[in-house]
Image 1: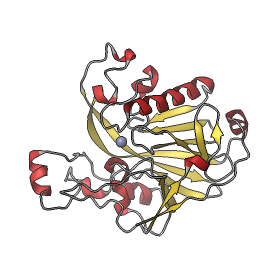
Image 2 (image 1 turned 120 degrees about the vertical axis):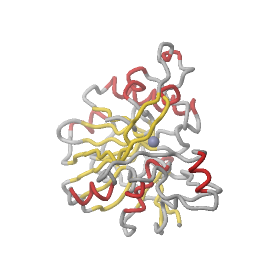
Image 3 (image 1 turned 60 degrees about the vertical axis):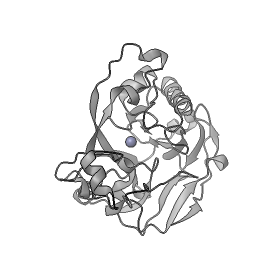
Image 4 (image 1 turned 90 degrees about the vertical axis):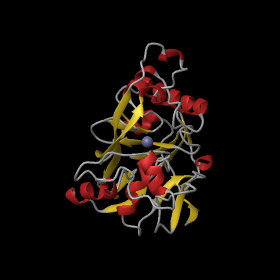
Length: 285
Ligand SMILES: [Zn+2]
């Protein structure tokens, strides 16, 4: 798989006020492709000053993919969620010499829960989605496993330098068949107020990729400037609503806790300035 730079469009907007004055014919529909159990403390950093009274408990949260429909530019996905291999197999048919052992011992592998007809290709077929490309917030398995069931002759886009590792002993091969992975170079994207580097994907102010590093080093969130109201897809810059309400970033599953907190602080500040923005967290609808 080669990596190439994603061509950025020039944006006409200088600030978010400009952007929100021109809502666009673009819509988001979120699909649940399965569930995963996370610890509440960890999804919320217990060391954060606002975390005081939050008790730990296992949370069953959805694994999401988001269908972006632009009247002119067509259908895209933000994240792929899970493919159908997780139905009846919490490990989604990982391969490798020790895969069986790890599964039995429940070690080092994320187990996911998937009901019938929850997988990404079912949702796409049911909605007659004609997929033109896929934007991936980051390369963790709960966001990319579904790529295995998606067409490969379309562009796949991540943040520049986002790491993708197959585990030493077993392989998910989630990105197999993709020839070129396109990368958004946020150092070349315009700095927008509060949020910093943001890429105006179509150049019409409808769909923005926002650099929100921390959960992974090149993590991306997205903003959809639709006609009903703008929607912020925080993706894993904020797992659950309570995290957004209390301004508490994650500590588990997170590459750089301080950086993740700083990215979330920006999103929270943005929502304060533009209360009309609806926020969808990474693992809660
Ligand atoms: Zn996730």
